Image 1 (cartoon, helix red, strand yellow):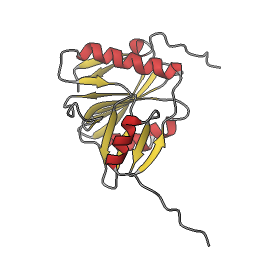
Image 2 (cartoon, rainbow, N blue to C red):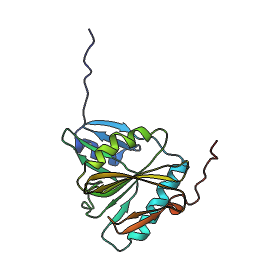
Image 3 (tube, helix red, strand yellow):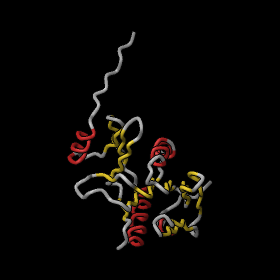
Image 4 (tube, rainbow, N blue to C red):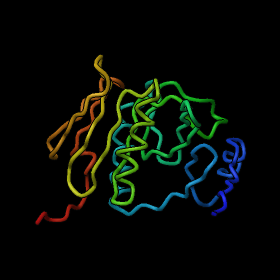
Length: 192
């Protein structure tokens, strides 16, 4: 007979206090913490390019981009989660004293081999359940390709953008995001 595992679950308040002091970022899922792995230069370059491109386009307007240091709180029916997307755009911001946002309109995850399954599964489903989310982007780093989930009258529809000449239109925030800017200075390995 095996013993049942006893979890020492953290409250949201404990998590938020601890995260402000921690040297390592953690995502929070219903009381359980998951340490975040560091990212490589290719991943960080693409995420930074997206933040810069959106920041320039949204300057002086109500919506603003946030980088990967900003958590998103997801109040799901069964639990509360906090994720750190690579980039998010918020048009109704939480108070400056909060360390998270509740109402992202655009969420961006830059894919890597270690995060692909989570970003395209659990996180995608969770983000798309938020009433504020209108667009979810999953961005490749090995070649210029972005998978977009966009809210329409029929629900979320999947779109694909490929090649440096492609442009992702984002009427939800009155902006456009050229793949040439997402992948500026990116180095792609030859396919073969």
